Image: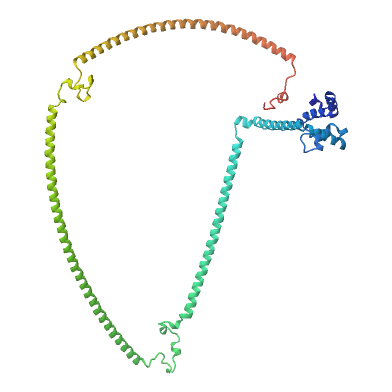
Length: 448
């Protein structure tokens, strides 16, 4: 009743509650319990836009505006302290209601989404896959960017190294040119006097007659000096050659003498090694001969011992209990009921006859059992034939009954169809207001 009256006004609501409970605070508590589950009105939403449900003061202002002044507000606040415990349960109920509303909205989103419901698309999984792919592409882009940065840095470093190498080469070439210019001039060359263009110009005191260019007046003296110098060079070379040959002959003689000494020493060492080898071979041969004689004597003694053991074993086997056919050898010393497996000689005549009698009894028992089984199979065959004949008769009777029931059912269905057609025609005449799409769209709006 109180929830319905919220639509008509808070004054009427307060009056009704006061008349019902005879206490203003009791009425306010009841109204607060109802309004906590309802949203604010239009006026309160404009005055308190950030408040979803009414608080104590706002509630008092909304319900009792004629008495909500400074004095009354203090009185209301003091009187509200004793009801804080009860109003806390209302707030908890409001929070629980809000949670249920949110869950219902989420459930409706899942159920009323036709694509998810019919096709079964896992949107969260697809979103996670899309995010993973974006992260992967971003990582690849960052990797390519880092690789490009490294390549650019390497190219810059290579260019700097090339420039440094070219600069070093230019500096080295300049240093070589400076060294040649300062320390290797043309006039310091050994053959400079042959290609000196200023040689004739530098000669002083030589007077040449006009028209006698190239005449050398001191050519005879210079030629004689050259021949003398060549003779001295030839004598010096012959002396050096003779000295070299003599020294080479001495070295060859010393080498030959050293070779002969080494060969003699090698022959002596070879003779000593041969003598030692012959002594070792002779000692080894004597040791082997002695060892072979000892082994031959040992084998001969072993063969004699083995032959003696074989003859003794043969005699023991011939004279022992193993090859004898006496059945008494198989009886154990513990009693007649015990046998010796190592000396057993087979069954006795009484035991064989007992076994034959037992086998004959088993054969007769098997024959009797086979005869009984054949008699039982014959009886079962007769019973199966009788059961099949009875079942065939029952099937024919059931087919006749089903045929009759089918005929009766067809007649009943025809009568019902005629009655349904008449009822349909009657309803079409009586009910003319046929429901449209707007009537059916009001259903299936909740997930419950």
